[in-house]
Length: 132
Image 1 (cartoon, rainbow, N blue to C red):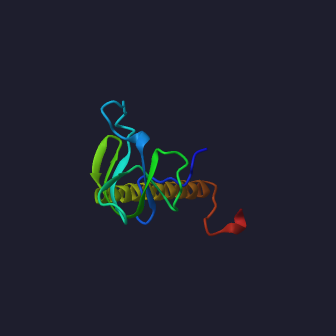
Image 2 (image 1 turned 90 degrees about the vertical axis):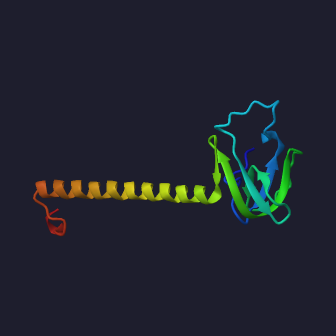
Image 3 (image 1 turned 90 degrees about the horizontal axis):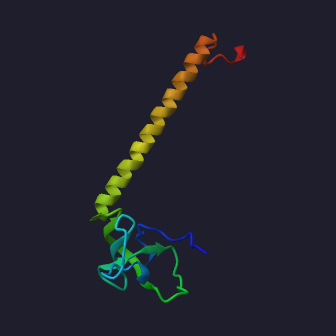
């Protein structure tokens, strides 16, 4: 059963966990393009590795997950083979979301323009609903 409350990147204020199964070690073969970790500070630890966070404290059923405490700060993120500061990550994520929003707005304006042109072709005015 997969837990749907698991977050990566971890969230400030959430509860952090380290999973030993994801630990980088010379004997492990790890695809660095899929490896995800963060360096965080919690109320119990300073600058530790974190693999995920959850909005509540979860007693892990296996011995591989270690509870690290409540996240106070996120320093670095490693994902898709890259490591960068959390501020850089949030800046680029916000920029990406804004680009998606702009693209959606342009697509909506294009659809509205095409609809308006097709109505004009049919001899209908946008404000004149009585002719429809």
